[in-house]
Image (cartoon, rainbow, N blue to C red; front, side):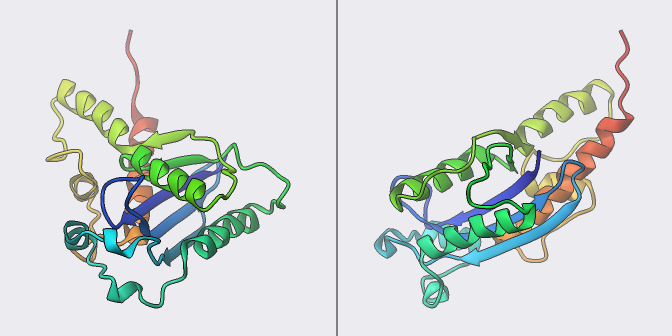
Length: 198
């Protein structure tokens, strides 16, 4: 059951209109050991839809994407990277991979939309672990036990709670995927110390 910790940067917020412009991923094994990393800029299919609001978040401009590979090549390489890391050929399924991320359903929707647009067969299931949902549960545990909790459930604040932080203020897909991966591991360490009393 491999874990794919995924983060995407997009040209805007609508999956059926805007494009993925950067992908960053960590692939981990059943025990959350990091196996490999993948990162790529992506030239948008629809440059006219590029949003200045999105650029303010990720700091990636259209000029930065001028020499980026097209989406088809990126996602072909993305799947090849997964198969190579997991030692699986093109005929072996990837349905056991679990997507992990902060509000990861949004990233899955963008990724699935991109696959559909490019007419690439979707090789995954949509199994997921959402860091935001796990934070919600832990916030209740922290409150019930009168333990200090993060300022909010944002990736930035959860990371800071565990003494982790971004190197830059703007978002970078691989850096955020790595930060998310580390937050998952910190929560897993907390889980191992919890005891239920009936």
